[in-house]
Structure formats: C-alpha cells, structure tokens
Image (cartoon, rainbow, N blue to C red):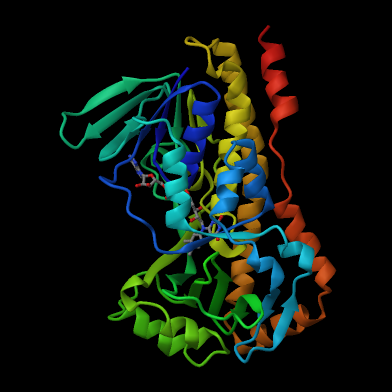
Amino acid sequence: MRVAIVGAGIGGLCAAVGLQRAGAEVVVYERAPQLKPVGSGLSVFPNGIAALDSLGLGRRFRRITAGDAARLDAGQRRPDGGWLARLPEDAVSGLRVVHRAELHEMLVTALQPGSLQLGTTVSGVREDGRTVDIEGRDSRPRSERFDVVVAADGINSVIRRSWPGDPGLRYSGYSSWRGVTHRPVDLLGAAGETWGRGLRFGLAPLRDGRVYWFAVATMPADEKVDDEYARVRELFGTWHAPIPALLDATDPKDVFRHPISDLAQPLPTFRRGSCVLLGDSAHAMTPDLGQGANQAMEDAATLTALLAPVARNEAPAAAALDLALATYDRLRRERTQPVARRARALGALAHVPSRAGVLLRNAVMRVTPPSALGKQAKTVQTWSPPSGVSARTVTTSTR
Ligand SMILES: Cc1cc2nc3c(=O)[nH]c(=O)nc-3n(C[C@H](O)[C@H](O)[C@H](O)COP(=O)(O)OP(=O)(O)OC[C@H]3O[C@@H](n4cnc5c(N)ncnc54)[C@H](O)[C@@H]3O)c2cc1C
C-alpha cells in the first residue's frame, strides 16, 4: 500500500512512522525547505501517550520528557497567587511536558530514511482522494497517485479548504505568546495556569529544569504590537512569583504571538474518497485543554490500527480500504469534535470579559470540588487505540 502524507507536523510524522511500521510505503511531503526547531513546549496527556505507545514511540518519548509536573501542585490561581481551583494529583500524574523541537526531532529520526521530501508543497488532492498535485522546489509541477492520502497540513490546510462543507476558521478573541526560559527556574512547587480578567498565564517544567510558559490576552487578532516581549512584561510582569522570574529568564527574540482560532463548525466528514484529514486540518481546536497535538496523535494511532491489516498488500482490496477509512472518519469525528467544543467553552470561561463575570467565575471555581475537576479531565485524557475490535472488523469483513 502506498501512502502520501501531506505535512511533517506532529500529526503527519506520527502517522508516517505508524504506517511505515505497519508495512506501508510512505512518502511525506513538507513545504518547509528545512525543519526548524520550534521554541516552545507541549503538554502530552495519558491519551497522547497511549497513542504514542501504540505507534511504538512511547519509550523514545518518555526519554525526552519530564514527568515533574506530577510532583507539583496544579490548578488555577489568581494573579496574586491565591488558588482558585486545585486539580487532584491523579489528574496530572500522567502529564508529560516536552520541548517541541525535541519531539519533532524524535519523530523525524523514527522515519525510514529517504521518506521525507522537504521543500515540496502539495497544491491539492484530486476528487478521487488518491492523486496529489505537487510543486517541488526545483522541479516542474507534477502529480502522483497513491492508495491513501493523509492530509496533515495543519490549521490552514489547503486540502480542507477544497473540501465540501469546509466551515473555515473563527478567531477565539484571544492571542497567545509562548516562550521557554533559557535557564532553569524554580517553580516554587506549583504549575498550571493563572487567570485574571481577559488575561491568562500558564507554566510547566521541561525535563532539564527550563520552563515552558504561555501568556494569553483578549485582543484583536491583527493588533499591531511593536515589541511582543515588552507587551508580555507590561501585562504580566507584576503577577505572582515565579512569573516575573520566568520572563527575566526568557530571551525576548524567542517570544512569539499567535492568534488562537478553531474550526468555525465541526466538519461533516474527515474523508473524501481515499483522502483523510488528520490533526489540525480535521479538527483545529483552541489550546485551552492542551489537546490539539494529543488528538493528532490519537488520529495517527487510530489510522495505523485500522490500516495495518491492509498495509503490507501492494494492491490493497478496495473494500478493506473503504471500511478502514470510513471507520477512521466515524471514530475520529465522534472523539475529537466534543473535545474541540469543550476546549472552546473553557477558553470562553477563562476570558469572560466583565468584572462581574470574573467574580462569578472565580466564586464557582473556588467551590467546585477537586474530584469534579479531576473527573472532567479524565474523560478527555482516557483513551485507547481501536486495535482489537476495529482492525479485526476490517480483516474479517474482507475475507
Ligand atoms: C498556543 C498553543 C499552545 C498549544 N499547546 C498544546 C499542548 O500543550 N498540547 C497539545 O496537544 N496541543 C497544543 N497545541 C495544539 C498543537 O500545537 C496542534 O494541534 C498541533 O501542532 C497540530 O499538529 P498538526 O500536525 O496537525 O499540524 P501542524 O503542526 O501545523 O503541521 C502541519 C505541517 O504541514 C505543512 N504544510 C502545510 N501545508 C502544506 C502543503 N500544502 N504541502 C506540504 N506541507 C504543508 C506545514 O509546513 C507543517 O509542517 C497548542 C497550540 C497553540 C497555538
């Protein structure tokens, strides 16, 4: 089975490694001429780790991550440092935080040599879902045919934009700066988020003691800011310790702002013919639950489990492929779309605009039992790949 993967982000690379290990011949097209290290962190929860385990990547992943978040008090605080809500220990015990550049490098080195084509843009996928139109750096436009095409080309996916029913993106109303300290900083025993009015700050430890942080503010998506780092200092520089120390320990040139958007509506399907959407292209969500990449990992593990029974065949049976892709579409819409809805709702709560709204929100958070918060987190973070049942269904139904 020949598979094209469009995009060498976390989702595309996980799918490429999984499908290669299942026996498929995989080509990954990435438009960037080189893979630049991305300077921020990523929270990976038990569901993402279960996906990496099923892709055979769990052990490598654990080596490059910190489980230290589990030893810290976690939850939401006020800008003066008082707790609004604490998460029970078991809600964060499985969390691991990774530097994105290290995760990316780990995934690229797990690929079979020669399967990644950098500087190669896919301009579209034909209606059969099998033929990709490609623009190489040094070559004339060409097209190539595959058994399956995986569109993992991110939130601005050109492939999704040609999809029937593409709802487009909607801006959340807030933007996020991200940074990693260049030296270890003492977190004083706590991690998580701090919520103000229209402002939020989050922090998490990396394995070497450096700290990944993000700062979020309600603002227009296209607001001009002359000095991004100075703006973060102005908004958060007087918040509780260790926030000012984290900003002191961050190189201003490494601080970037991203407008936060998600899909305006859930997509009616993640599949067209033999092409499937995966990761942000399928279900771009706001990062409020830290689940975008975790869900992309789940997508990759699900697709791999479903296609594994047919992956080794040079000419896979059409019925087997059809069933596997239809099952992927159904399972992943059912799983990801409610997560995206919850992420958006949490973001709206965090950025409630009025002073009265903030007072009410804080009062409710203070009286919510930690066990209820833990239960909510668990429903998102508990997941296992569909290896047994669905893969067997695919094989048996094609005999
Ligand atoms: C502030 C912030 C914090 C976040 N924190 C977390 C977190 O803690 N945990 C978590 O799970 N998620 C988090 N996320 C979400 C996470 O970053 C994304 O969900 C994830 O990176 C999506 O991966 P992807 O592979 O789908 O897309 P991407 O990483 O966007 O990769 C897409 C790739 O496709 C390439 N490409 C695009 N178009 C083409 C084309 N036409 N041809 C060839 N190549 C193409 C791009 O160059 C890129 O390399 C966060 C997001 C933000 C904005």
